[in-house]
Image (tube, rainbow, N blue to C red):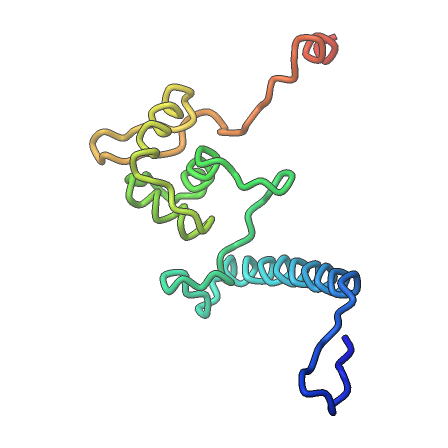
Amino acid sequence: MTESPPAAATRYATFDLDEVRREKAALDEQIARLTRRRDGLAGVLMMAGDATCDLAGGDVACVPPVASSGGKRPTHRAMLVDVLRDAPGPMGVRELINAVQNRFGEAIPRTSVSPLLRKLARREEVEHVPDLAKWRIGAASGEVVRFRGPKVAARDAA
C-alpha cells in the first residue's frame, strides 16, 4: 500500500490486490490450522472432564471435534447412534437431542428424530424400551457399511 504525498488535499491509497489476496489466503489457512488445534485441545479437556468447559453456556471451544470424512459432518443418524452407543442407559428423545447438541454442536429437529429412531429400530441398530419410553443401542453395531457394487463385491468374495 502506498499513500499520496501529505501535501495533497485528497489522500489516496493504492493496494497491490495480488499481495492482499496472498496475505488473506495465508491468514485464512492460519485461522483454519489454529481452529483445528483449538478444537482438538478442547476435545481432550472435555474428555478429561475439565470444569472450565461450559457447554450449557455455549462455549463452542469446548465442543469436541467431530470425526470427519472428507470434511463432511456426520449424518443425524450417525450422531444418534454415537450418542446412544456411549450412553450409560436408555435415553428419551429430548435427552438424545440435547446430547447431540452438546456433543456435535448441532440441533436435530424433534420431528426428524422419531422417524430416524424407528428406521434404526427396523435395522436393529437401536431398540425402544416401551416401559421407559426411551431408546437404547440395539444388537447391531451401528456401523455404516457401503455397498461398493456387484463387480467389487464379487471380486472381494473370491
